[in-house]
Amino acid sequence: MKILLVSHGSFSKGLSETMTMVLGPQEDLDYLGLYPEKSVDDLKTCVEEKLKEYGDEEVLVFTDLYFGSPFNAVVQLMERYDVYHITGINVPLLMETIVMKNNGKSIEEICDEVIRLASGSVCDVRKQFKELLEGEDSK
Image (cartoon, rainbow, N blue to C red; front, side):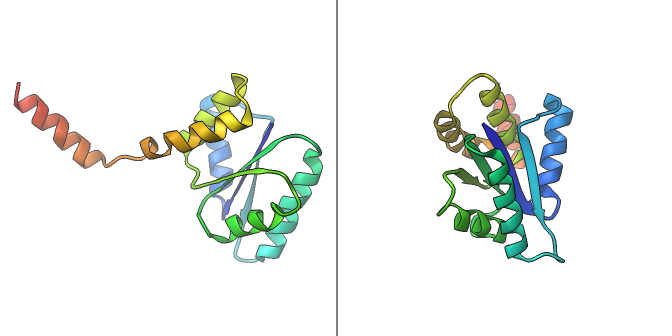
């Protein structure tokens, strides 16, 4: 299974670099970014080149923003390429994805689990700390 990160600017590159720092080099992880000097069609061409390069291998594409340009480029290609596509990627979800992949989970299992974990990948830290402190005060 290949994982392709597609984002605005260098976000996808940053995610990839973070995974290397945390989990070590990941040979099945690629990234592409849309920059101001490039068009959505340029990005779509780059994504398509990657998909052709992967051949028959299963591909999980992560995009950064629902209905953003990278999302739209991937959706247009989904008419011709059988890829899995999840949008709204962040560091914890990508890390979980790679760990599950490396532990032999199927791409379908990974997609289901990523969606299940998504709400837990963000939190209101101020609110959480306040609740913790209030809990300690009641002891």
